Length: 448
Image (cartoon, rainbow, N blue to C red; front, side, top):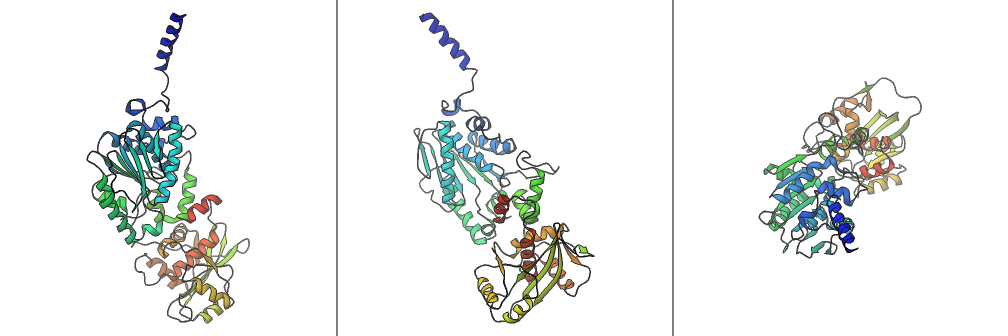
């Protein structure tokens, strides 16, 4: 009987060598496979992120040798999920190493660490954990913080990983924010990195002068994962097919597309609106009609321009029918605006809300749209439609020449006039209804 048990035990040990190691049994470098394979075992419900193999390679290399890497990747392609798995994988492979995780805000960092904690529980990682700090029995761990947050007193001898350092376009376009993020990264984050440790920045690009742009200029290794490559192939065709990407491209415009999805942010200063596309006949039925406006900020003076642009929207195209632009007092502007079709859309922020209220008191209803970003940012969607021939103008009209002149000269850099640009952007946003995107995607990309 004893001999039989011994034989069974010996055979089980032989078989065990052929079985994949259980994540819960894995401890230390020898028992944990590569990141891609390990992620597939711990989270089998996820498709293996083969499209993110360059990020996997960079993280694995960063554990073997000192590295400074910047990786540009598009949004909604799984990079943050991969990074969170990498944090747990790092501690299983090198439990004595101290790592840091940085994103654009402390609260977001804590939320992400909660997600990572769920992964750690499935993987059997044993660590003392708070909202923003983990510690292993071997003395390693990870601390999570936002840009501008505390890292003093914490030494990074493993990996400092930055996962998206900008919240939105407003932050990206702010020179003050960009400088503050740079100063924190160089004077706080990098000073905590020990010799031999590595830094990997995985981010969606927003601006040529963002954190990634400055690091690239300093000679850091740079890897770009465009949403669509030079041969027209999508990065993640199983989840983000070309049709979906093209719909997003039409929605957000070329400026954001180049930065967010292609990793090639463009400086302002170039032409935004190309040559016009004309129509010979207006749609006579089945169309929706509306007006885009940009009203003077001051309530009762005539120092600023007020603009109204009306158009008909039919089968995905906007036909401009009338443009009015003048320096008038609020009462006169109201008398003109009542002749323009409703609804009347305006990108109205805090200052402009007073003008909306004044117009309402004068008998003119205005539909206020959220004023996200500046006029250059808001113009991108309309510019994309304009350049694709989805916004058309008549061949002759009294207002046509000055209207085209403003659009063709608009660059987003100290433009003397941009009132008609913003009115057109409001009209397009109000009428186009985010063609090609689901309601959830509409909400998502409205915040871009």
